[in-house]
Image (cartoon, rainbow, N blue to C red; front, top):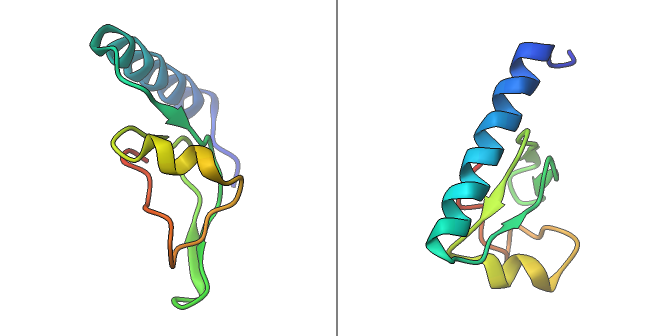
Length: 77
Protein backbone atom coordinates (compact mmCIF):
# COMPACT_ATOMS: atom_id res chain seq x y z
CA UNK A 1 0.00 0.00 0.00
CA UNK A 2 1.38 3.39 -0.96
CA UNK A 3 1.55 6.07 1.71
CA UNK A 4 -0.90 8.93 1.36
CA UNK A 5 -0.22 12.64 1.07
CA UNK A 6 -0.60 13.35 4.77
CA UNK A 7 1.87 10.60 5.61
CA UNK A 8 4.39 12.02 3.13
CA UNK A 9 3.91 15.62 4.30
CA UNK A 10 4.50 14.64 7.92
CA UNK A 11 7.58 12.62 6.94
CA UNK A 12 9.04 15.53 4.98
CA UNK A 13 8.33 17.97 7.81
CA UNK A 14 10.06 15.71 10.33
CA UNK A 15 13.06 15.26 8.01
CA UNK A 16 13.40 19.03 7.61
CA UNK A 17 13.22 19.49 11.36
CA UNK A 18 15.93 16.85 11.88
CA UNK A 19 18.22 18.48 9.29
CA UNK A 20 17.66 21.95 10.80
CA UNK A 21 18.41 20.68 14.31
CA UNK A 22 21.55 18.84 13.16
CA UNK A 23 22.76 21.91 11.27
CA UNK A 24 22.38 24.03 14.41
CA UNK A 25 24.32 21.40 16.37
CA UNK A 26 27.10 21.29 13.78
CA UNK A 27 26.90 17.50 13.68
CA UNK A 28 27.43 15.30 10.62
CA UNK A 29 24.43 13.32 9.40
CA UNK A 30 23.80 10.89 6.57
CA UNK A 31 20.31 10.16 5.35
CA UNK A 32 19.78 6.78 3.76
CA UNK A 33 16.20 7.52 2.78
CA UNK A 34 14.06 4.41 2.43
CA UNK A 35 16.94 1.94 1.98
CA UNK A 36 15.90 -1.63 2.72
CA UNK A 37 17.77 -2.98 5.74
CA UNK A 38 17.94 -6.75 5.21
CA UNK A 39 19.23 -9.42 7.58
CA UNK A 40 19.94 -12.81 6.00
CA UNK A 41 20.31 -14.47 9.40
CA UNK A 42 16.83 -13.33 10.41
CA UNK A 43 15.45 -13.77 6.87
CA UNK A 44 13.68 -10.43 7.11
CA UNK A 45 14.21 -6.76 6.62
CA UNK A 46 12.64 -3.39 7.13
CA UNK A 47 12.32 -0.32 4.96
CA UNK A 48 11.71 2.90 6.87
CA UNK A 49 10.30 5.92 5.06
CA UNK A 50 13.43 7.83 6.06
CA UNK A 51 16.45 6.79 8.06
CA UNK A 52 19.35 8.76 9.47
CA UNK A 53 22.82 7.96 10.75
CA UNK A 54 24.08 10.46 13.29
CA UNK A 55 26.31 8.70 15.83
CA UNK A 56 27.34 6.12 13.24
CA UNK A 57 27.45 8.60 10.34
CA UNK A 58 30.95 7.62 9.25
CA UNK A 59 29.93 3.95 8.99
CA UNK A 60 27.05 4.83 6.67
CA UNK A 61 29.38 6.65 4.26
CA UNK A 62 31.59 3.57 3.73
CA UNK A 63 29.18 1.39 1.75
CA UNK A 64 26.19 1.76 -0.54
CA UNK A 65 24.57 -1.41 0.79
CA UNK A 66 23.50 -2.53 4.24
CA UNK A 67 24.92 -5.70 5.84
CA UNK A 68 23.16 -6.49 9.13
CA UNK A 69 26.04 -8.73 10.23
CA UNK A 70 28.52 -5.85 10.25
CA UNK A 71 26.74 -2.51 9.78
CA UNK A 72 25.07 -0.63 12.62
CA UNK A 73 21.38 0.12 12.20
CA UNK A 74 20.29 3.72 11.57
CA UNK A 75 20.16 6.00 14.60
CA UNK A 76 16.72 7.26 13.54
CA UNK A 77 14.29 5.45 11.29
